[in-house]
Length: 89
Image (cartoon, rainbow, N blue to C red):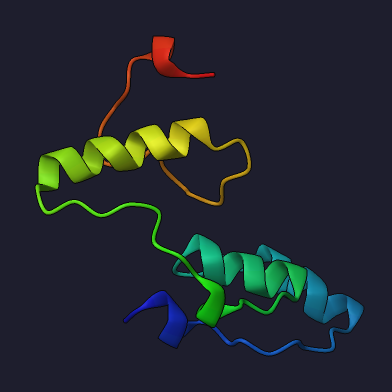
């Protein structure tokens, strides 16, 4: 199931216990965690693909480099390729 289908994309009114429960729940993706924990609405129409690549190995490498370059990232991992620490900012 895609993240977009899985995410409840509407603001919710939390009680204190509801907020604690939402913050403690581990969702299926980092995006759904962000929505639930910060009561955030994702602008799905404004989403942009950063880069495209048909070659799987090269795509994983590019993904890993893009994650390493980004300081504010929601990713739970470092991408599909383990970069050497010398490439980390």
